[in-house]
Length: 263
Image (cartoon, rainbow, N blue to C red; front, side, top):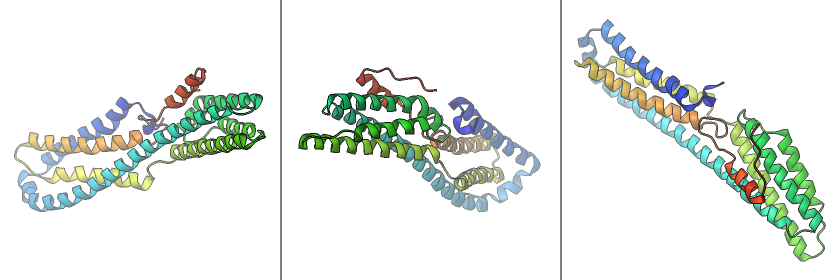
């Protein structure tokens, strides 16, 4: 189990509580091994450098949070678009020749059931489901066998193909988002930058050690909480905060079918 798949509270302890305790402990160690005057003599120089480091790291942290949040909301939009197109295709099937229409509706239902039961668990690992791909291929085959006899039926077929294309594109988008995350080089910058930013506070000197410990702990809490947020939503379909197939399940309920449990 990776950190990204940990439940929220264990991840909170490992990423926020433990590093904050170590940061405060580092302050105590430095103060015990270094005279206060040596630290206070460097306050002015260290303060100017810390301001630069802090601003650079704040920009990097905010950028990473913004990117992963945008990815999460885009993944939610993809699922909603996929569900909406599936509904439209199901309704358009009602205008087809009865046997073909019933078959298309059955295939739409089967695809949604497969997406919920097979593909969502697979996306937690960053991959798609071969079973869902087969169900989508079968749906294409079911639509393409329809032979329109007049302009009205041609319009129905064109609309069905358009909605099927939307389903395919939305699925491709969510599979791409499931397989991608924050690059390793950015994680390296976030973690090393956080360590440097927090470590800077160890080399300031205040007469009140408790106050300095409180400031260091507060800074560490903010930095590590930002890292936790990024980790929690880095993988939209596999993190602590994830996109669930509730919209697809609601569509199945509207069709009169019960959503299957995820495997």
